[in-house]
Each structure stands twice: as structure tokens, then as C-alpha cells.
Image 1 (tube, helix red, strand yellow):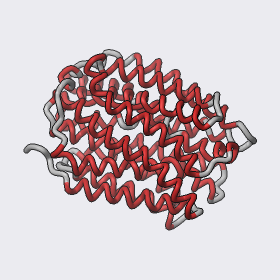
Image 2: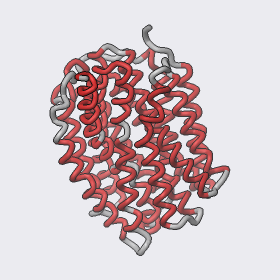
Image 3: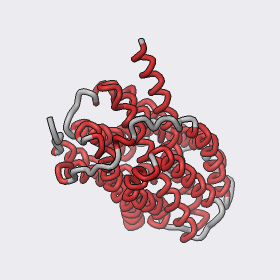
Length: 389
């Protein structure tokens, strides 16, 4: 009974920590897809220019990722997570103040740096808590990765209704996103006692060479998933979907992410090597193709639901791989290495997809490339072996 009580307490603690990726990814990064169509029209951008705003966020994320492990070792995981969430929120508010390309990109870089600290710091804390529960730790760790889904749902309930009425309304949408972050930062503070075990997860070095296949796969995943999350909403809107269905599609992605731990945990706990990573990438790739071959409402909603549940699971599998294969002291360095590979991929993804769209004149061209990149990540995952028995 006592162990069940500890499990429940730790699960609630990780659920609170999940608000960090809700801010860092669900709101600060992904919700830009909701605002992109109106900003692009109002500011006269090409799709490549619009893609740069997410690429800048990813560049900031990359800069944060390469310094996160050292910062966490020096300042503590919780402190860096909270500071990162605050930086994300400030960057979101800043996007409402400017319309110049350089200023907007700088605001997105700030959000990206904060996002890396929030995500890596929260991930280290969640991994330390999950390590106390053996196989059931897979579910607890999965709870942390429901956070982006929560942010996606909240942004979908607030932002679309602010847009579509005239020039400049995208500014109000950024303000709404910033306001959504404030109560989540307050709730994050309640998880300040979640630091148990974090010291044991920092300070060591991770062996990179044996993880090259999965690191390369994570690079491909970063490039592939971000194109879907940047441009698929614009694609659905371009098909003539009404406001109600636009909201429903975005919520399907979010609810898919929230339900992922319950759907995937029983299977992932039995898989080893890079198998879970490969399966989740292949599922995300299949979901990304669905809207390109059939544009019915059911197909589009199913794509969003499955993609939401699988792309966040990919992220979870990398942390599980690190926790399973590296000594405790190297966990922070291992998460940092994967986050860096991920950051490189998602920095390039939106720009390349946008450039392909501009060159060929159709959003579907870039989205096809996104799907095939995810399948490439799945193949690389199958190559990866565990580092030790």
C-alpha cells in the first residue's frame, strides 16, 4: 500500500512538472502554427520566411541544449527549468510587440533557449522520479511528455477565435498565449521539491559513439515532425476547413499527446534497443501521410490524433533509452546530447519545408518530405542496439 501511495505521489509530481514542456513546446513553439497563416498574410511573408520563425525558436533551443547539462549541474534542474519557463513566457509576450523580422526572430530565439532549459531540466527531474519505480517508471516518465499536448489543447481553445477578423489580430493571439503561461508557471513552483535524485543524474559524461544511429534518427525526427507541426494547420485551413474543424483538428493533436502514456506504456515497457523509437516514428510518418492522400474530415482528425500521440512518444523513448543504457551520473549529459541532435534537425526542418513549398507552389510538397524523413528516422532506430545487457 505504501509503495502504491508513493507511486501516486510521484505521478502527481511529474504531472506538475509536465507544465514545463506545456509552456516550452505546446505554447511557445507549436502554437505558432495557429498564428502563422494570419502573420504571413498580414506581413507579406513567403512560406520560407514564415518557417524561419520556428527555425529561430529551434536555433535557440539548440543553443540552450548544448549548455543545459552544465547549467543544471551548476544550478540545479528545478531552477533551470523554472528560469526556462519564464524566458519562454517573456519571448511569447515579446512577439506581440514587434512586426520586424529581426525582432520577432530574436524573441523566438529567447523562447527557444528557455524551452531547452525547461525541457531538459524537467526531463532530468522526471527521469530521477521514474527511476524509483522500475517498469512502472515508463508510465511516470510518459506523464511528463503529456505536457506539450496540454499546451496544444489550451492554445487551441484560445487562439483560433482571436484570428481571421482583420490585420494585426495576430498580436492579440500572442498575448493570449503569454497569459496562458502565467498560471502554469505558478503551478510549476509547487513542484519545487521534485529534486530528489537529480544530483545522481548529473556530472558524468555520456558515451556518444554507441548511440550514433539513434542520435541521427533523432536529428531526422526533429526535421520531420516540426514541418508537420508548423505547416499542417495552414494546410488544413487551406483546404477550406471552417473555424470549428480547425479547432477540432488542433485539439486532436493535443489530446493524442495527452493520451499517449496510457496507449504506449504497456508496449514500450517490453521493447528494447531502438525499437520503441522506430515504432513511434513510423506511426508518426503514417499519420503525416494521411492528409496528403485523403482530405476528408475523419482522415484529417485521425491524422492529428495519431500524430499527436506518436510524435510526443518519440521524445519519451529517447529519455527511456538514456535512462536504461547510461549510468545515473551520465543521464543529464545523455539527455543533452539527444536534445542537441533534435535541435539541429528542427532548426533546419521548417526552413527546408517552407523553401520546398515556395519552389513547388504547394504545401503538400514540403509535408511529403516531412513524412519520409520520419520513416528515415524509424529505420535508424531499428539499427540502434542497447549499450549493455
